[in-house]
Length: 203
Image (tube, rainbow, N blue to C red; front, top):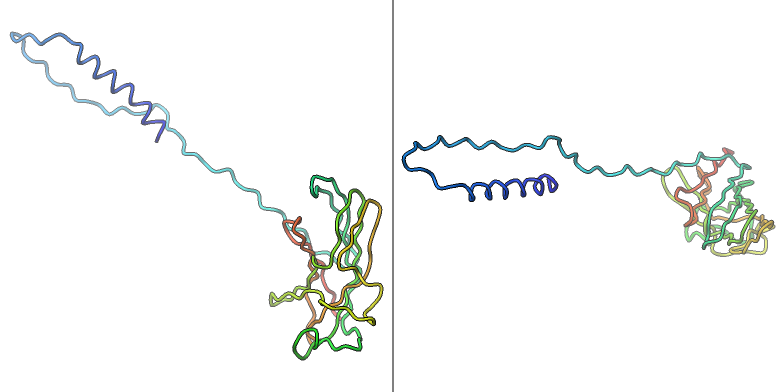
């Protein structure tokens, strides 16, 4: 509408200018019949602006235990390539300390997830903070905030820096409901638009 209005302004001004410059009417001649003004129309409609459709990120398929996710990208302006993999899941892990104590309630036991992270190119931090267990009802469980001497070994470090050609492998322990199993193991760092998931197998 803005373009259409601006296009009509010069035409209206020109019409007023021509009318003002005409000679005075002859009183002996009959007055000419007034012409009926016609509404000017645009020869071509102006299309309304349309928004460009935004592309939704495509969700990665849920992987099976043992399948790696290989990636490449940029972290802090540095090109990186690497991989993440869930190698195993075990529930009912024994410890001298009850999982109820860690969970702050009853009916819990320990579970361990075995992970492997590798850097092919560049350097970045691998951390347990990117991993959670996801349940069918939507609840999530983070790794245990404590560690004990009899937890499964080797342990995956809370945080470690990987450089090109280096890997880290170990187990992360969770306090989980004893009568339930998680649906997936989720990897969700800030640099990933859609979290990666691995299916937890049935018993």
